[in-house]
Image 1 (cartoon, rainbow, N blue to C red):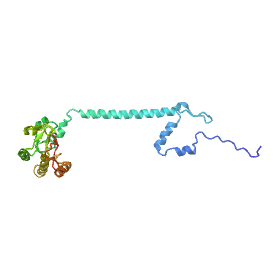
Image 2 (image 1 turned 45 degrees about the vertical axis):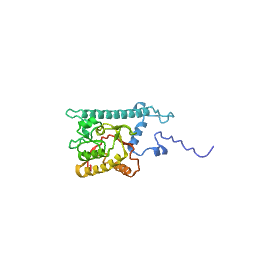
Image 3 (image 1 turned 120 degrees about the vertical axis):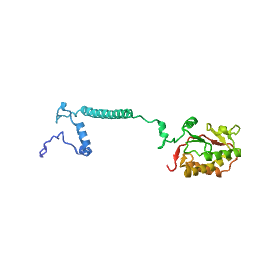
Length: 253
């Protein structure tokens, strides 16, 4: 036997925290309080026996965690439901009606900004068919003087409009200038169209103060530049003239 006196065994306090558990504990106070709440024993189970070797039950902790998730879920559902009800009540308040979508196409002076999406819409809004750009235009963007010159140029040169790309089904000028169908035109007409469109753009900026969104597009200018520099058979009717419904905008807007 050893002469050394045996050191008495000091039972480790059940509530003492180890070094590792201290290092793992989050530093944020609200997280610490939440974890303390989840790890605490429920009142109905009393204090754990410090000499008991049975690990503490985890059921209360799991039930608390489950309860917190249920409460959080119910709060989120309540918030969403309340928001939807308030939004619906605001939308249907007496004396407050939602403006029809068509009013969004009116500018601050109550002018139509578009001619709709069909010839009947365009006529109902007082629009005119722009035979140069093949587009329905509002009165602010329609250049009647230039249209008369353009149509005279078309007739003088005998250029035709066709119902098909083969150029075998010509249509009358009255039908072509009616703005009801997409058509096909010869290359010479296309080239002259570009020169007239540039005139139309300058007149819009210097005289009318309104310009349509198609004419105002830089891509169209690049397109016309390509047309004027490209070698092409002048008699081919392979250029599509599609009916458009551009937006009429104030110059510089």
